[in-house]
Length: 135
Image 1: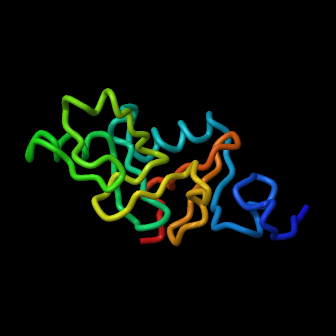
Image 2 (image 1 turned 90 degrees about the vertical axis):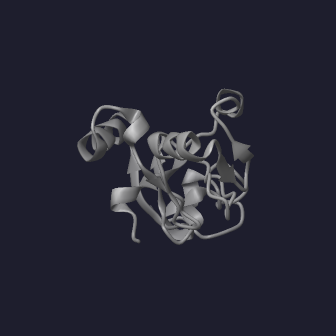
């Protein structure tokens, strides 16, 4: 079934096939299976690509930057440090943590709308795995 592109369908799974740059609609189990296949068992190493700006991020890469520099500069959160990361609880698969972008998958415009696409996992918009992004 093809849905019409309309403002009421944008941001919903109802309009994803015509309104957005969606490459996959998958179950949570398939999402975890693919992540493990691409990056191994440890979720901290799973790298995601911001749909809007193309910034690649994983929990491990952000923590490494914080350990090296003392903080990670993020447009969305400002300076993320090892002390405040547990309070902020950024979502690596739905929030861009780059210094130049603050795009979020759950905002008014879902992550799948951006240049680099995204996935729908059990009805939730998430960034693509970096290894599968069109960069």
